[in-house]
Structures are given as C-alpha cells and as structure tokens.
Amino acid sequence: MTPTQSLPLAALPERFQPELSGIDLHMHSIASDGALAPAQLMKLCADKAVGWVALTDHDTLDGVAEARQAAEAHGIALLCGVELSTQWSGVGIHVVALLPGGEAQALAEGSPMAEALRLLERARCERAERIAAKLEKLGLEDALARAQRHAGGRAAVGRPHFARAMVEAGLVADQAQAFKRFLGAGKIGDIKTLWPELEQVVGWIRQAAGVAVLAHPLRYGLTRRRLGLLLDAFGAAGGEAAELVSGYQNPDRGRDLARLLGERSMYASLGSDFHAPGGPLVPGRYSPPPSSAVVPVWRHPRLVEWFDERRPRGSIQETSA
Image 1 (cartoon, rainbow, N blue to C red):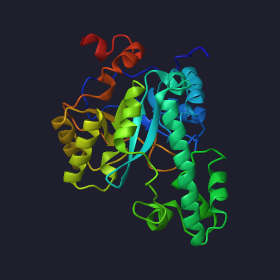
Image 2: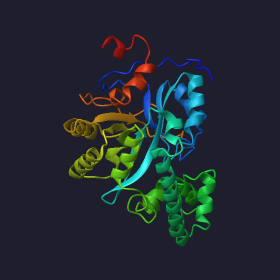
Image 3: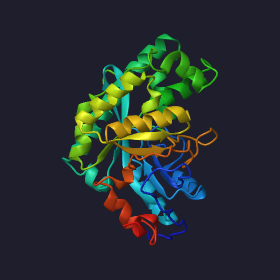
C-alpha cells in the first residue's frame, strides 16, 4: 500500500523535554490483550496525531503486519515491537523488544525471536491452564474456555481475559476488582514461574538485533534499592533502555528514575501502554517526561538509522547534525 502521508511526522528531539508528543512506543491490540484491531489502533493513533509508534503486544508479533498496512495508509512510522514475559528474583517482569529489522526478519524460520515466541506461546498456554484450574476452584466454571472466548481464540490468553470472564460470570464487579482479589501480583492467579529468566529474554532480543527496553519499571512495587538491583541485573544481561515514562505516573518518581537511568548510562523510552478506549490512557498521552540528559531510545545506535530514515526533512535532528 502506498503511503498517503496524511499525518505529518513530528520532529523528535535529541533530549527529553516536557512538551514531547507524537510518539508512543508501547501499545496493545487484540493480538494480545488490547481491545482494538491493529488497523483500528493505527487509525486512533492518526486521529491523535501520533506518528511514531510501536505495537508491542504480549509475546506475539501476530498484529504487526495488519498494523503496518494501516500505518502506511495513515503516514505513520511503525516500529516492530513485542512485550516479552520474563521473571527476575521471583518477580514477573516485562521487557519490550524494539526490532528495527521488522517482523519478517524476526519471524524467519530458525531466527532467535521466532524460537523465543514459540517457547513463550507454550508457556502462556500452560500458564492459562493453571490459572483456569485455580479460578474454577473459586467458582468460575469453564474458566479457560471463557477466557479464550474473550481472547478471540488467540493463543495469547492473559489475565485480563480471565478478568473479563469473571466480570461476565458475576464473580466480581469489574476487572479492577478481579485483579485486586484474584489476578494481581501475589494473588492466586499470578503465575509467573513458567516465564524464562530475564537474562535469557534479553539475550533473545540482542540476537535478533533488537533493543531490550525494561517495561514500566515503576509498576513492579519495588523499593528504590530493589529497582536499582533490577536495573543492574538488566544491564548486566545486555539490556540497554527502560521506559522513563509509562502512562501516568508520579512526577517525582519519574525524575528519580531518570537519575537511576543516567547513573547507568541507559537509554530511555516512553509509551502509554494503551489497551482499550474509554479509560484514562490514550495513544500518545502520558505524563510529561522530566527534563533529563538521559538519551532517548530513538538515538540508540541500533535504532537511529530507522528513525532518521523516516524523520521529516528539516527536523531538529537534521539541523543539529
């Protein structure tokens, strides 16, 4: 499909600034636990003037081809991505893989990422079966079938699909209550022992010539010391970036996170972690990033060529070279 260039791409700065807009490197579609089809999500991005995007569904690249076709029609620059499930010291951790080589390269037979996604699909299926068994004991009959129906028959069945099934069955008032009582961190439905270790996941991303980004580091409920240890372990494994901003967050914690990243010479990414319309999150909308000397992930050596090839002529990047 020939690009229409209906959406002018915003110039991306070389340093973070509070008024940054037009970019979102963490979003979800119905290929995992989002509510919109990939094409619908790209249309929403265009409506919100978000021209730099990454589709980062959980443990799958199934939605990227559809998203790319729609992105081209709207003049959106779509970076191939995926959010991979892992664990570290007994904590479930998510790592976003940004893959400038695209989905064809990532999914080529025998490629490290294709093998990784197959392994994660098997782990996710087994995890779903275990969650279903636990929820059936709590009164959710045919739990797995119900969750699969909410997942549209896709393999990437996750806790949000079980939450929707619990709401439908009348066991909880809403999805927030389902997570608070049964599916959230440390609850009966929080099964993470099947996920591969952090080091293995980061290794897969590096083998695929991608950039490993620690997803929403402020959401794991870690103390500042433990967060520092996680960042150290992530860096030692080959991880090079973390999400400085993920959705809406406390500005003081954001500034402190910037300091932690700066101390470790890590790159910084950002995104809404958008899943569904109707809530507070919208593509391209998140807390203002703190002014910081931390280098944006779009200036990473493995990503800079991808972004520069698509940047608007006469942009800040071009004139500052």
